[in-house]
Each structure stands twice: as structure tokens, then as C-alpha cells.
Amino acid sequence: MDDHALHIRLVAGDLDALAELYDLHSPFVYGVALRVTGSEGLAETITQELFAHLWEQPGQFDPALGSLRGWLVSRSLHDAATRIEVG
Image 1 (cartoon, rainbow, N blue to C red):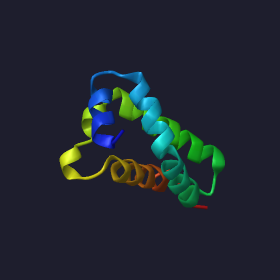
Image 2: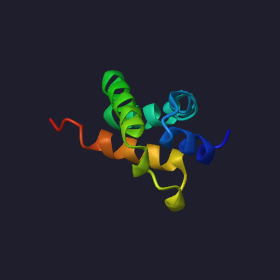
Image 3: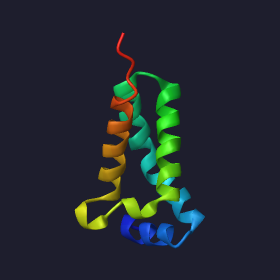
């Protein structure tokens, strides 16, 4: 199933759609967060929080502006960059 159809289901409150989106896109979200932060734990947290946010507010993603994978990876990059500890 494509992202657009999954997003429609997600907006309708279909928890299975979230699981499918997680299976499809979490490796990319996690990979970006891990590369930016260098921390497996923080990358896991960012991934979980991002998908929880998508579940709670699926309307924040606008399919007219691009792909869901691109939106998730962009959010992951932003969230990871704001959590980097500068030492």
C-alpha cells in the first residue's frame, strides 16, 4: 500500500496504518537520528516520539508538499539536530 493510502487511513484513526508506516519508514527515521546524534538510545527515542506525534496529529503532514518518507526524515533530522549535546 502506498503512503497516500496509509495516510488517509491514519487520519481516519486506523492504528494498523500507523504500524504499517512504522515498519516502512522507521529504519530511515532511526538511521538519520542515529547518524546525527551518534546515540542509539536517543535515535530510538526520536523515532518513537516522531511516530507518536504522527499518530496524534496526522494532519501535520501535507501530501501536497511531498512524500511522507521525506517529511518523516526531515523531522527526524530536525529533532536530532536540536538534541545534539555540544560539549
